[in-house]
Length: 123
Image (cartoon, rainbow, N blue to C red):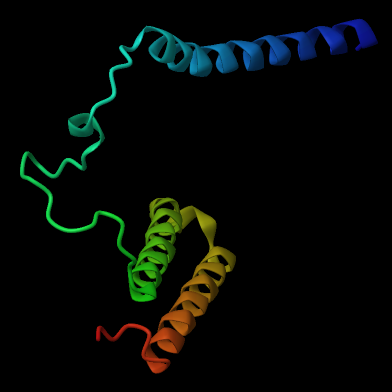
C-alpha cells in the first residue's frame, strides 16, 4: 500500500467528519438565525403541563436521588452486557461463564455494600 492511497483513505474520514459537523451545527445555526426574538415574562416562565407553576423552580435535590440514579445506571449497563452473553452462551464455553459470574459477583458486592451502608434507605 502506497502512502498516497493511505492518505486518500484519511481524506474520506476527514470529509465524513466535516459532513457530520455541518449536519449537526447547521440546524442549530439556522434556528438561531431565523427564530423570532421577542422575549417576554410569559415565555421565560416555567411550564408545567399547562398548569401555573407553584414555588421556586430552582430547588436542590437530595444526594439520595443521585445515588439511586447511579445504581440504576450500573444495573442497566449490566443488563446490556448480559443480553449478548445469554444469546451466545452455548458457543462461548466455560471461560465466558466464569467471566460473567465474576462480573455479576462484583456488581452484587457493590449492591450489598450500598445496602450495608444504608444508602438505599429513603428518609
